[in-house]
Length: 467
Image (cartoon, rainbow, N blue to C red):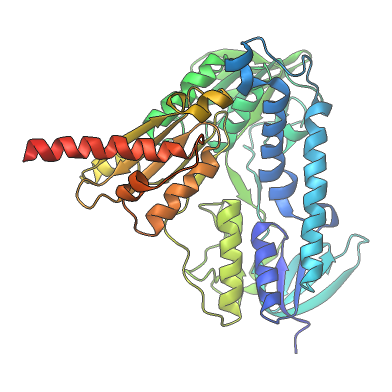
């Protein structure tokens, strides 16, 4: 007899969905997490606070309204950190209540503390008061998430030299900032601080940024960030960061020196597995703290599962939720469909980016013929109404079977709009569906019809010439 049918270590998106899915199948379930971390990294230092901060920045700076009211328009002249964090604290508090209520309604026991393995079925729960007790479970799900990776050569102080967790607790908005790393997190924060008026320099050792995105979209993002006074230093590495009384000095291997109020490192993520005593359960992790799993999210010990960022790519809240549900269903012997290969990517830069399917570069490399259909927000009534003249939607269409091969969106609402393309692609629809469909007017969704007409007109011209 076990204490529980399933114990989930971690209460982030993957852990929540695993616990609730198992509970709905009639299993006894417990979730272990620190009392101040209910909701996991996603809720406290990752997805939710960073996206809420972005909304606060957009609202208070009035950035998206400047096409309508002039480049000097601001809702608030002197924006403080308190202004920015008030909204974040409100949202995080509400979300914690929602998660606690969901777990309670589904009769999931919430155990405060941290866990480590004693053996493959036994965990030691270290409670906040310092007491430890053992718990057993037939199935265990590891959903501990990640923390920012910190280069050992850098002395982080949480005030002037930061990682992406510390940046949420800045004492003031820096006048200037160096961001090391032009990945998703680095570019999201670069655009936020640039919108606040900080002079941002992005240092990236690779020759470009976001190379998995559509090249035209990346160029558009670079153009808009440069317009906000962001400087890019590609092909550069940081050799040292010096702390001084009045700020920091970032020294590049090329000899360049960049003075700034603060430096933020965005150097990837490290799995939170070092305190789990994995070896006692017959498990291990790689140098990034990630645990290997099979297609059912089972580890090398069949009754122990791992989901979410702790297993690596794609490390998104959305995919973590599906992984948690799938793992719980498999553990409970419930049939589950494999996760669909078509997964949207959302990047919350300013403006935001979202895409699904393949890029032009990938299709060209694979020698797959395609035609492009474009729609620009400035040509849509809704784009004019909201003051977004730079947004765009791009459809990549097969001229042979007329199916969508990829959808790429840049601008207001991109992460919402992408789901129309996802649905059409997932259901095997063609570009003709979008041509014939009626969309509400005026909307940004109408961009699908405009882009579809553009693509089909191009295909028609080719067909006529080919005769």
